[in-house]
Amino acid sequence: MAFRKDFLWGGATAANQFEGGWDEDGKGPNVPDHIRGGTVSTPRTWDYEIDPDVYYPSHQAVDFYHRYKEDIALYGEMGFKCFRLSINWARIFPTGMEEEPNQKGLDFYHNVFAECKKYDIEPLVTMSHYELPWGLSVKYNGWAGRDVIDYFMHYAETIFKEYKDEVKLWLTFNEINCGCSPSGRVLSLGMQGEDGKTWFKDSETDEEASDRFTALHHQFVASAKAVKLAHEKYPDFKMGLMIVANEPYPNTCNPDDVKAAQDTQDLQNWLCGDVQVRGHYPFFAKRYFKEHNITVRMEEGDEEILKEGCVDFYSFSYYSSAVEAKKDTEEAKTAGNIFGSIKNPYLKASDWGWQIDPMGLRIYLNQVYARYEIPVMIVENGLGAVDEIAEDGKIHDVYRIDYLREHIKAMKEAVEDGVDLMGYTMWGCTDLVSASTGEMKKRYGFVYVDRDNDGNGDFHRERKDSFFWYKKVIETNGEDLD
Ligand code: BG6
Image 1: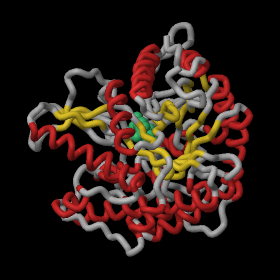
Image 2: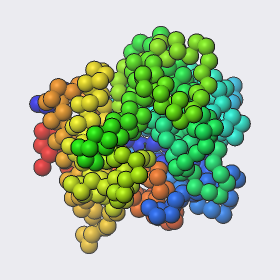
Image 3: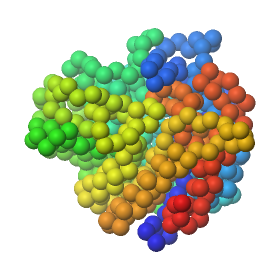
């Protein structure tokens, strides 16, 4: 058998895209609660004041808050070994700044973990998945404010203590490397956007870039402190980092293109990986910051903290690879997760333009493991597609099965190459709100949810064909992929 006996097969979600119940039982608003829905061609926009007449996708999302028992039972039926979810920080501390946690928020996750236990499903918890409480975003411009580290630590201490017997696997920040690009300012770093405008920025001034990298540095410090705390107090916890994988190929063998691909790889993957796995900024960071007039506001003692808080495993999301070329290239562009890229003529793309590349997953797994030699886990992968209900009332999502099959085959190859792969949680195991577009139409799930882009639908769940396929994959530990 290629995969470990204890391989963590499962699915992944995030509170803001899944739970709904955005203002129930004492929960405060968070940053995504202020972002409207969009489409592939209309960017999502950001409102300082929530408009009661506007539909915000995260407010009801797909109602996991009220349907968690049914959802987790479906995961049990598929044989999940692991369920990745995030704790909604603003459900525990409504503004992020309270001394005492919100008991009803704490209870909700106890209930969720109890359901997981019923089916022998191990929870994998992301502490912060694009869910900064709105109060902290306003008061400190999100992670640009150093005080947010202390609030995060208060949250970390609270949830570690509260769930220490129920949760052993933790990720500190979702896709922390989004902070390496201007597009990560609002969602990933919780910084304030421009009222009524898109949250997806693609350029900034030197000063703004300095604030952004300072905010990212604060996340590094917060992550390291949380890891250190876990290692000291809860030795049975396993603490992971989480990165959006970007495997950049050079557009040609022109050395300038190859260098451009290396620069992208350095900035978008290894900068965050090195800080969190090796405990220090990589050698190339200095020159990058200097050449871009970026000043990262670090404090004395920060270097020590980073050294003391190295993670136990490396996790990542993988949807597509990328192509890089020297500056000012005329090549056609394509969309991708967070980072766009030049079009790769050898690959097909999803309806949202994300290029499908299972081999890229094998390459990335090998690169990561070669560099860090710690266990690796794929905590997001999947196909966002439009699902139609067929005449027989079912959803025959063969395209999704094909996508997943090819990626699992690539994982198998990587394991045979020698990569220590812990598990695989497919993204959006139950249909949920898309992070980039806010749509419901972009579906990933094994389980269909009756909900559309405008908020219509009764939320009822249906098993798709991929549901039964994945059940068999898990039963055979990845041996039967037909
Ligand atoms: C990752 C995020 O970027 O990709 C998820 O961690 C997100 O939150 C997923 O949903 C897929 O992206 P999208 O835009 O298709 O939802």
